[in-house]
Length: 248
Length: 158
Image 1: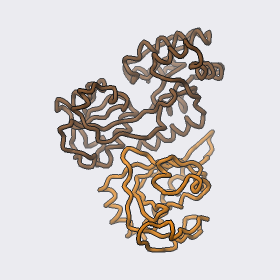
Image 2 (image 1 turned 90 degrees about the vertical axis):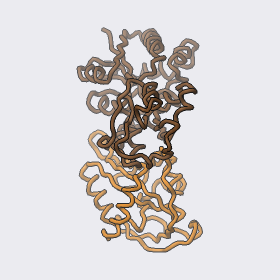
Image 3 (image 1 turned 60 degrees about the vertical axis):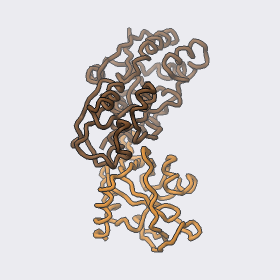
Image 4 (image 1 turned 60 degrees about the horizontal axis):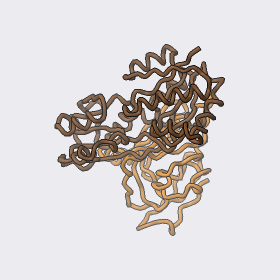
């Protein structure tokens, strides 16, 4: 029997091969046959989750509530020291220096990433901006969000902080950060579905110990992580509650 | 029971009033007109027991309230209650979360040093295995225009 593993579509494109290497490593360590299926859009991912096709997922925090409360998923680990943060930026030539100076009707560039968009919209609230009074400029990735700002096709952009920091210095020079979130407790999570849960403790331990061996360390490097950290059930519940408070 | 505020903790000129709290107890509070602006990009997070006793605070909570974590844990959440906040707002909060629903509102909080800060607060019940185990409160930066509306509205609710 083969199990299905997937990664939230907001993975960094340069980590794609890293996830395949990780899947191979995990199969070798656990002896479990796991097929990695990457979805490019949230809609196809959510269809797969609803059809109970997924057994293991590196999930966006926005999806965690649905996975735990509707699909019986449990948390395994998170990437050590990593958290999801968002940035609100404008073109460097824009005279605006504070979100409160923005006006309804602005063109707002963002991607499909649901947690980043949520954090971004919260940071725009002090400017009395909400989904009902902005013009959305949906973008496929954060480089395109930046391009929309540089070309004057959008007034404001919402970025995943990590993606913004990884933009070339030439692009960043032409942008200006208005706000950077410092939330710290919102993060992606590796989660396990009901069909694999009898192996949960074993898989969790394998992952926690991963950085201790040379090969495991190499795989972690290809994912851009330094190690995995156990997520307690209550920590996951807390994050779900937190996301719930923000999603209003 | 929350200890009365002490003059030596207060920064600047202050006024004094005795507040009647939601749990029936009273507290002498000292308050100033000094506002601490909400820090950009941060969330202030706390959890309480079902009775409203603080069980967890994050760093932003500690920084903005002026109290140490040790002073906050085990203390009623009303340690932040500012005299300009009408009791009706907190009654609405408790009535709403007691029904298992989310509450949202704009709140003026009192700091240990007598100053204040405005927040947009959201409170939700924490349900574990079908049981209420406490409440999580998350505050974010409020819109200045909404705060202005509250500054006009709240005095009419006393």
